[in-house]
Structure formats: structure tokens, C-alpha cells
Amino acid sequence: MTAGNKQPAAIWGYVAGIVTGVTYGLNPLFAVPLMRHGISVDEILFFRYVLAVVILGAWLAFKGANFRVSRKQMSRLLLLGVLFSISSLTLFESYNYIPSGVATTIVFLYPVLVAIIMVFMRVYPTWQVWLSIVMTFAGVLFLSRSDGAGTIQLKGLALSFGSALAYAMFIVIINRSRTIRTVSNSLLTFYALLTGVVLFFVHGVITSYGLSGGVPVSSVLFRGLDSIEVWGSLIGLAVMPTVISTAMLAMATRIIGPTKASVLGVFEPVTAILVGALAFGEKITVNIIIGIVLTMFAITFMIVSSSKKKRTL
Image (cartoon, rainbow, N blue to C red):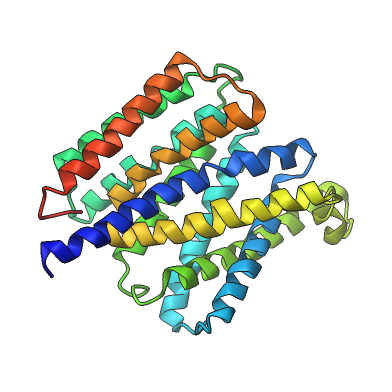
């Protein structure tokens, strides 16, 4: 394949990576109103994944997609679903112990974790990618300094780090597994989310039974889902930071590699901060401005420098 043919594909990979970060960064736009309405994390995650599976499944059926996969492929898809679900659950739970800005910063360690995991697999990032990782991490540190509220608890730190690690493993498996290489991005996303539906339902049953003294799980899972605004937020949560974000992540990872795709995820905290400012009236400080400038420079540097390299990660 010539360099001329590779360039357009690489461009789409970068676009997909940016879309991944932006759409995933919209989580607060839909999740915060739900939490303020008194809806539990289990409810939010369960219905987020259910609606996402229904929407994506209907789209795949409309296109006449073949849902059949081999047993070996299904085992990999189940693993991806477990990892993605763990990442979501631990991130949401970490908000109960540490400020959301700190949690977001720790989760964004996943590009570093991806690079480290890839090194163990004898795939070494270029110095440009390493420099981009350092700059993006420095930028996110500046972004997180705007949130000085709350007490840092070890449990919260562990939960958010666990979210980052699970997300990093998710990215690496998509890129490195030959077994699922023939599975489309949409079908991969469908089965990953379907696994999440089962996991969050089971988790919700166990949690609600213990907390409610044996009250039927249906009365607990549907508690608070009593308005159009609530269901609108749930649908938005299912479409933007779930279906679109996960599908674009799979696309970006396959085209430009896991490390570069994960670095482009810097748009996640940037988007989340802008959403906080525009939708919830949170202040944009000097630290936030510095952080955005650093991260945007890092992204630009990585894209421009990588186009000059024949060998990419």
C-alpha cells in the first residue's frame, strides 16, 4: 500500500479519535442531571447500556448485519464488555469519594498505561508519541487543579485508577487481538454493551436486594424514572458517550493504533470542563486555559510529526 493510500485512512483515524474524546466528555451533560434527580449509579449505567444496545441493535438489524460470531470471538467480545463495564462502574463510583476533576485526571492516565502495556508486548512508541503523552498529562494536571473541593480518599483514587487500567486494556485488546479483527466496529460495540447490560443488571439486583431488604429489583431500578427530561438524558447518555464514543474508539484504535488513539482522548476532559462551564455555570480558570493550550499543542504535535514517520505504532 502506498503512502498516498495510507494518508486518508490515517486522517479518518484521527477524526474518529477526536470524536471519541468529545462524545465521551459529554458524560456530565447527561449524567449530572440524572444524579441530581436522585437516580443511582446502578440505574444510570443499566439503562444507559440497555438503550444503547436497543438503538445499536436496531441499526444493525436495519442494515441487515449478521450477528453471528464464533465462540472464540465471543469470548474476546465478552472480555471487552467486562473491561468496558468495569471502567464505567469504577469511574462513576469514584465520584462518591473524590472530586470529579481529580477522578478525570487519574482516568486520563490510560494513555500512559496503554504505552506501558504495549512496551511489554515489544511495541515501542516513537519519542514524539512519548512527548505527546507527557504534554497531555501535564495539561490534564493543570485542568484538574481548578477543582480544589473535596477530600482525596484512597478508595476514590483506587477506583479511578482501576477505571483507567480497564480502559487501557480494552484499547490494547481491540488493537492486538487477531480473533476479533474481522468483527465490525458496530458489532464489537454491540456485544461489549450487551455484556454490560447483563453485568449491571446483576450488580443492580445484588445491590438493591441488600439495600432494600428484599424489595423487587424492578421497583428499585425504575425508581425516579418519572419524567421526559430523565428519559431524554438517559437516551443522550446511551447515544453520545456510549454508542458513538465506543464505535469511534474501536475505529480509531484499528487505524492509528492504541497509543495515538488514547492520546486523542484528551478531548474528553477538555469537553467535560467546557460542558461544566456552559451547562452548569462552573468557572474557567487560568489553570484550565493553560491545560487546554498544552493539550491542544500536544495533539497537533503528535499528528504533524507522525505524518513524517513511515513506521507508526
